[in-house]
Length: 235
Ligand SMILES: [Zn+2]
Image (tube, rainbow, N blue to C red):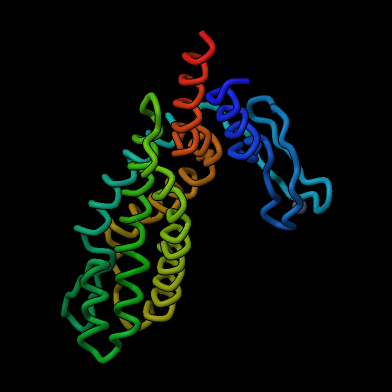
């Protein structure tokens, strides 16, 4: 055995990636298991806790892209037109979502104002923007590694995006105030409800595993390079 050959054997034994791409851990009970190929629309369940491990969604990237392109349009409309109008003893007033947060800030409710601004304006914008970046990145021939970094942090924006909570709060306030003032629901109120459903559908139809599989990781690039040099060595 030549020196070069023994070196090759060395890297084959000691520098092997141990990961098996078909191995996944259950998100609910951490049981590692091997995921077999499943048909479109079908799902796999964990044998220990019976929770869904993965559902293979049909045409996930294109469908998510369509919703992710519709969402910014609704988002811009929802934040530029009034959400509510009030008429009290002949005086009219109306406000947008951002205006509402500003009112809270000016009236000594700074913390609530910041929370409303963050959870109803900033987080949804991040949720939509990052999802658009992930889908566009994943649609490339080989998804770049930054897609993985964005995908890893995307759930945080989803957790903080709480338009529906704000909407329920607005409805409760409306019911309480309706005896004292004439309330005019703004266009934003309806647009935001549509946006809530669009965002829910966007998340439900998105298949993160499909994106993970498309990302070219460093060790994969190294393996490709090692494979090339091995082929050169043997030829
Ligand atoms: Zn489980």
